[in-house]
Image (cartoon, rainbow, N blue to C red; front, side, top):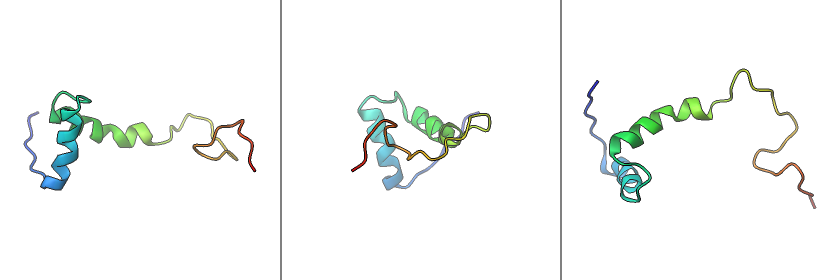
Length: 64
């Protein structure tokens, strides 16, 4: 499927930046990756729940 999308300049700039720095080859790759973000970041239903753990904090860190 081929789909043309028009974005406001402020929305297109981050896409162009990802391509310019070489993270993605073309703008459509950036858009494709952004469409997958919800499924990549959503908690998996089959994953065990991590209760009582601070997100982003190493497990063995000492708190002061």
